[in-house]
Amino acid sequence: MPSRPAVTPGEEAGAHPPVIAKVSKRLLWFLFICFVFSFLDRINIGFAGLTMMDDLGLSSTQFGMATTIFYLAYIACGIPSNMVLAKLGARRWIGSLMIAWGVASTATLFAHDAASLYWLRALVGITEAGFLPGVLLYMTFWFPAAYRARANALFMIAMPFTAGFGSVLSGAILGLDGHWGLAGWQWLFLLEGLPSVVLGLAVYGYLDDKPRQARWLSDDEKLQLAELLARDRQAPSPHAHWGRELLSPAVLLFCLVYFCLVNTLAMIAVWTPLIVKSFSAGQSNTLIGLLSAIPQICTIVGMILWGRHSDLTQERRWHLALPMLMAAAGWFCTALSNEPIVQLAGICMAATGSYTAMSIFWTLPDRSLSFQARAVGIAVINAVGNLGSALNPLVVGWLKDLTHSYTAGCLYAALLLLVAAILVRALPHERQHSSREWVPE
Image (cartoon, rainbow, N blue to C red):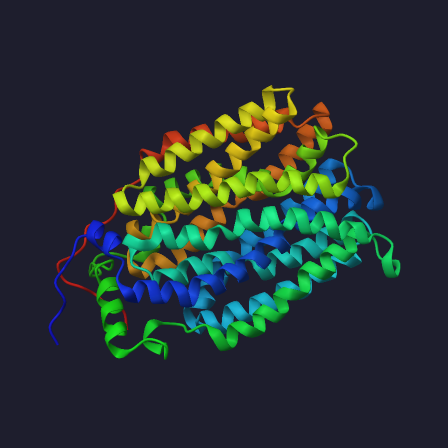
């Protein structure tokens, strides 16, 4: 059968073939909902901390340590989880992970001291570790690189959406304090953990591992999608070895940039409710939840518009560096101003810039890795980068106990973003396509 005429990436991005639209409508909304509850189960400890810290007698350092332990477990299990996904397929593995972390997150309501909280958060980290790198890998099976910034943005707006929606929801759930003998933070883990179990069961019936298995695509649509995806793949070099590729300077640089960026993502996810509370003294948890949602609304708009612009121009590096600089400026505003409105505006800038940068970041690694190295490479970058998520809560909690304010923590996040923005210009250009297409078995 003759191949369709080749088109340039820019033409592909502008033309938006119907098969891409069909794949987007089928997958993105469902993956979005799954990610909402994944991220909610990851960050709800930030709101639980508004009352849980006092109930369990935790210091800021101990509270930060609980999140650090979560991310250490998350990092340790991310790479093996993606290797299992590559063998078993997304449908079975992601479904199983969602059921497991839903149960583990719900069980956090039984924490009674620092040690029990540490064990439970480690369990959530172990079970949730494979979801994000697994879905990022899964999307490379369905979306050609020219469309990936928009697809990533539409999927990853689950993070600011969840932070905003979760802020309002969690603030309201904390108001259930005392009902049926449960504290507000216990209700929070119960009501926000169980939906992941239900969604995990739904994954088994909804997702297909590869386009060729999708009964909702016609044979012609499967062929068209296969041809678009084949242009992103290179013929394997007979001298290349994916293990050496993972230790290349390019992969290490991706890890370092992501480490610096993820520090800010953890800062927003874990500390925003407490930072807002610090300059909104005397306000109710419900109002703090509403104020914490404002930065996330800004972020959703920014991610969609910036991701679309990056795809249309097919430019990635400046589209990655500029949001990082914006986020750094936001943390400086929050740290150095005494005006609550300026501090809130700074958090809006930090959230919008950092989440937008993350959606652009994940368009780059798979274009610099061979197909053989992609599954493990994405997991390695995600795992090493997430050391920033493990380190940030501990560092910021320690700085808060030391200085009795969040100023030093905001400056710490801002400086790392400046380092990341500088390093972006050194990231490798994408691998050149081989004239010989290679499609894996």
